[in-house]
Amino acid sequence: MKYDFDTVVDHRGTNSLKHDFARERGKPEGLLPLWVADMDFPTAPEILADIQKRVAHGVIGYTEPKGDYYDALLGWYESRFGYRASRLDVVKTPGVVFALAQAIRAFTEPGEAVMIQTPVYYPFYEIIRENGRTLVSNPLVYKEGKYTIDLDDFERQITSHGVKLFILCSPHNPVGRVWTPNELAGMNEICERRGVIVVSDEIHGDLVWPGHTHTCFGTLNENAIVATAPSKTFNLAGLQTSNLFVKNADLRSRLKAEISRSGYGQLNTLGLVACQSAYTKGSAWLEEVKTYLAQNIRLTREFLATRLPKIRLVKPEGTYLLWLDFSAYELTQKELDRRVTEGAQLWLNSGTTFGQDGEGFQRMNIACPRATLTVALNRLEKEFS
Image 1 (cartoon, rainbow, N blue to C red):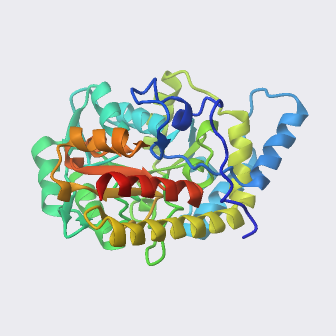
Image 2 (image 1 turned 90 degrees about the horizontal axis):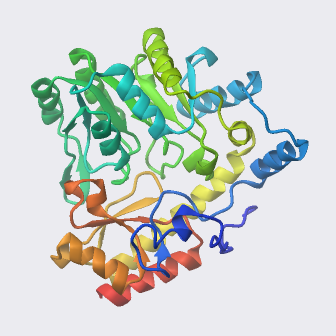
């Protein structure tokens, strides 16, 4: 490989949320952290070089992107996902979760229903409830090691609760599904017929594994809001840059007005630089990191199958976040969490962080050097064999 993903970088003392905040998050010191969704790899050196060049200029003032930024962004999504948009369709925000919260306020009123598919990324719960909306769930169906969508329940929840907005997680975090075109079309048909606005969180869209293809929801529904960011793909979360595609002029106007009411204006200067650089110079790095991550997934799958068969890996179709089923141990979630933390000395995400549908599960981030992953797997074996 041209790029090095094996070197273990010491993140301690850098105010890393993943590595430096165990005590503040109620965890013992010294745990091996494989929880929050960022990588332990440095980002692409081409991106770092562009950031360093901008810093060397010495002036970090208010910044707006020009044509090259939009060309890079739009070209990436057209070439990789067949999704065509114009620069007028782009709404920039400092993060996808921020954008989802703005969409909730822009397109629903207090007390109105917003639907999600559980278990799901936990900020979805927070931004719905904290904005005074009614949370409605269309639980995913877990059967024979795979999650699917109950479309009958999907429509039933919409009609019985008067759902106004549906937040789709695609690819899905934490269960790792990459929704098929048929699954997406089924949800889209119901939402269009019932007048439900769809906001599709596609932040993991670049991280899909062989045999699966990410379908941008915007290719099915011109009125959908598609939320994207380079943060997961290129490990740039700290630069807080995301891009929404909103083709419907009325929805775009309402969303921009809500963002304006929040007081937010220009994005992080270095985030804009990094985003443009990623979409123009990051392809080779991305392909290599995906190869490395796929090897980490294979290592984990083979390790569990041969040495910890009671821990069932839900087959990941996308993302570097593995969803591990510990239900065969018949532990309460509290006891499972304790054994992972105190016994295995690992910091994973408790399954119920993603809702009660996650009981009996743990989420593990395998975007780390193979040596780190091997240590983690050996600790699991020592505790759970």
